[in-house]
Amino acid sequence: MTGTAADPGGSLPDPSWNPPPAPEARARTLHGLFDWCVARWPDAVAVVDGTRRITYGQLAAASEDFAAELAEREVRPGMLVPVLMPRSAELLAMLLAVVRRGAAYAALDPRWPRARIEALTERLDGPLLVTSGDEPWPGSVWRVGPADFAALAATGRRAPEVTVRGDDANAVFFTSGTTGTPKGVLTAHRGHVRLFDDWAFAPVGGGAVMPQSLAATWDAFGLDSWAVLLGGGTLRIMTDTVELAGRLRELVAEEGVDTVFLPTAVLHMVIDTDLDAFTGLRVVGTGGEALSPAHARRFLDRHPQIPLHNMYGPVESTIAATGHVVRRQDCADDTGIPLGRPYPGTAAYVLDGDRVCAVGESGEICLSGSGLALGYLGDPELTARKFVKVPVGPDGGMVTVYRTGDLGHWSAEGLLHFDGRADRQVKMRGYRVELDDVELAARRLPGVGSCAVVPLHGPDGACEDLCLFYVGTGADGPTADEVRALLGERLPAYLVPARVHRLDALPVLEDRKVDGRALTALAEELRDARAAAGSAPREGAELRIAAAFTEVLHLERVPRDASFFALGGNSLYAVQLCQLVERDFGVNLSLAQVFDAPSVAALAKVLEADG
Image 1 (cartoon, rainbow, N blue to C red):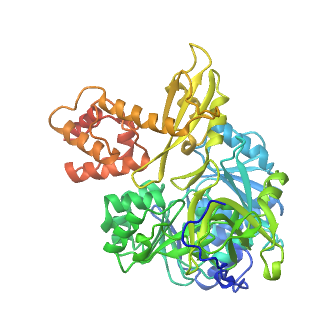
Image 2 (cartoon, rainbow, N blue to C red):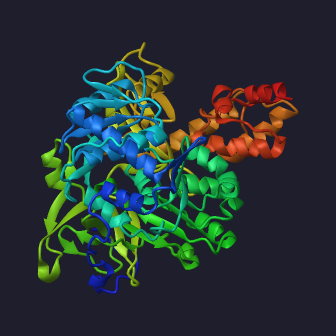
Image 3 (spheres, rainbow, N blue to C red):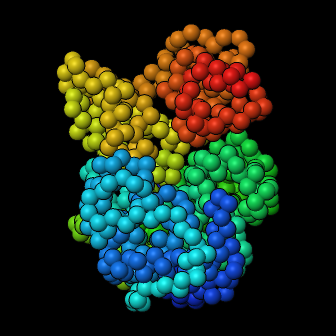
């Protein structure tokens, strides 16, 4: 398919590299695993949300009360319920309530553009929208305010029982799609149970204390929510992963956090800015994109006693399909940090079409097992194209697999490795991004003609941002800033390109295809040109802040009046900037201050005003 990634040796993968299915030990549904914990540790703290400490018994009672209300509002098994709520104990109770009713939840982000939320809610065709906000929405709406968990525990209100099976849908996750319409992936209870029934990363009864920072709109949300709540541990609600990165040291030292999952880009950032922040942790997990060997080596050198789990799995295989505890020798492997071996209930294959690739031979990674999603919402054609039967079972039997589009190979010791993508999809800060999706959204804007999006990579090779080039359809077409603002009204923030440039024409190759390499080079030239333009920083605070800008953005110089974000900064880089300013000036600089005063000159005024 793509040649070989290592010395293949001609042998086929050992069937034992795929573990046999394991029967459920505790329950067959997500809420069944939670109730198992409630029965054993009703008074244990399940969630810390600000100053509130909610026990397992209280969270269970709230979910039962919410489920009773959903039943009265005619939520029945098989329905899809959109939930528009921020991270909170109430959100967790509501998601549990939805699955208790035999329905599936679709968590939507209140920060998404209104048009996107309305379109997704219409596609879900649910009986109501559950929200904690005051905005008006079409259709039936249930507005949920702050809950009195102790009072709800005293009411004993419960919904009529319904039968829920492992094959029933429990969640819908929307991902970027090549058609411009997000793909809705339906996951099943069995996918969560196969991971968390006996989860070594956060052992059942082990009392793990873990920050919950991932968005519920992402299936990896399960790694820092259900992974803990289905095993008797404690969750600490955070604003987002950016806050977690900035406060990790404090959380470990002062709040007893001992388990953490960080998206790969965030892990890299913490390793770069505060490597000692991990001291005191029991275990660290990461995933979402390729783990940098250099960063992994630095982590292991400083914290040899902390297991670093590298996890892999698209949403179509529910949360995680493979995992690997990183070793020092992995950091010197030319083929990168291994994705590892399949988790119980999952099987991985490397295929060239339907042919099983030899050990070391690169092909498409295909996944099977109880983690497989039920398919794509309202798209049977795409479901049939991506979930296919191939003859990889014992004696050539047919097995249903999901074709990931990821390329990989098996090593001789039975570890799966990642070799890249077969299409225009990239992973950026944990999100799956289809470049075609962003381009289609841009072409729909008035005054925008042809356009192209290129990924921008950092020093470690990870995709850090997107750059959009477009050609206007007239002399008075939208400016680059106007295009970016319009996209912000239509797309979630992670899909909006950090940089936008208008060109007279896009560069093309001899076959008339857009020259992506030329555009990538041009993006860097324009960024460097912007950094070189403008007046130099002044003596004093400006020079010191400029030094922090150059260190974080990997630039030789920055002008005093250019925006940190126009120079290539993003929210993760902004966290690094805050940490450098704290180190140099001895003051706390908030992310809000960076967004409000993003230039060297403006930040200097902020710091001078604060003394």
